[in-house]
Image 1 (cartoon, rainbow, N blue to C red):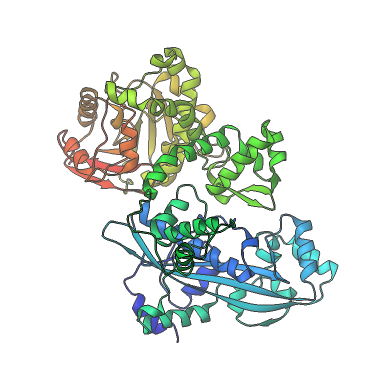
Image 2: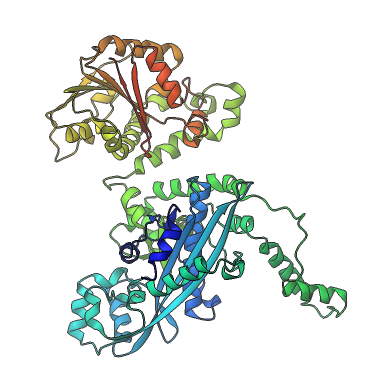
Length: 618
């Protein structure tokens, strides 16, 4: 009953849970709280030795998780939440924090220590209230608290221990057990909030919400400046703390004051009085102090993060860690034939970027890395990363020259031959890059509109047929022709799925600019139109329009579609390769297509690599 009145206070607010834990989601959903789930990218790498008690570590971690999500949504997603909830649960025995076990032996050692003893489970919770200031800066108020529950294990037999360990359940849980599952059979008694052990102290959370919304004075919300411990992320690091925290200035003066007083010459005069005022929070640094905005720091460091991803992918770091559990830097260095010193720095950078995890000086893939960065994963973007590193990076490496000349950067201007640019090796890299990109975005393109009325389709420049396979899977009655250059078609075999029915897909060699187009009800362009100069663009659209039968045919386009104000970064950054084509907004695509007889045009933002446009000739 306690939460029900509070729910009405949250109606219409954007509430975000900064956790991927299904247990926390269930606890909050079951009491009727409506919220979005945005898992935090904050890596739990805080130095535990800096905290006087374990619960302080849990609270700080929860706070940093919530702040990371709040900042990311505000700066990158352009969707400032009203409230972000962060939580972190730890298991402690005699004030020692027990991490997730590295392997079965580690799990055995951990659970053996807990056997027959009482331990504590702490959950730190942070409730971050967000608002956007007039200068588009994020302002936050933070409420934080923790809950402790005492849990006593029974005396565990060897058989019971190993039976539980062999179930696999301990491996992803702090302390090596989950009380809500099989781990419950290890527990003799619980003193305190059971849900706190599961992962979220609901009762304390409800009381805290009641304090916030039924005691509206400013004193009820403790304004916390982020002066505790700055976190390390890809772009949202110390700069974000500086941006949001006037107390950072005060901390700087505190450090300077301490430094000044470290010598024997420190007097008890006015300077000591000022130092005392600073230390006690009475005196602030003058407001004229200038701090570099986090946005500038993000842009300055952005290329370093990209190159870190490129280098780790090029060296197959994520492949080496696949299915290997956790490995130390020395072992990984040996596998990639690199120096231990350099490898450790690369691995630590990947941890900071959220690509790897680090526990007890051992590294392992995150779920994100296993899903998208391992080269043979179903939805891997490894090939696109390598293509970006080897082929796109040089374009932007000489961007100032391309801007001055106003033309596409050309490899031959920098020591590359035409054979290198358009030879077999480049073509294979390009095909692999396009294949992995389309595998990820094909489902969203195929389902952006109902295409079931079209029995035949022709994917012009369809490359490896990745979109064709998705179309025939989504629409089993559809037959798809993939029309591309001869050198492309002769190499498509290696890209075909092993267990798919290819009887509905036909590969045809040809040049869509020069040759007659195969007949179809639905024509498709994926990442073609933005690259073409105006004369070729209109020539091609004219050909497709003439091939379409009014009322029975359509054109499906997959491109990055600019927002109407033309501020979408990906499309605009792509345009800097100085190709002869243009990036367009939805309105501009509509006008372009209407000029060629397509009088019903729909634009769908998929939220994926590419957006979708369906143009029908009625």
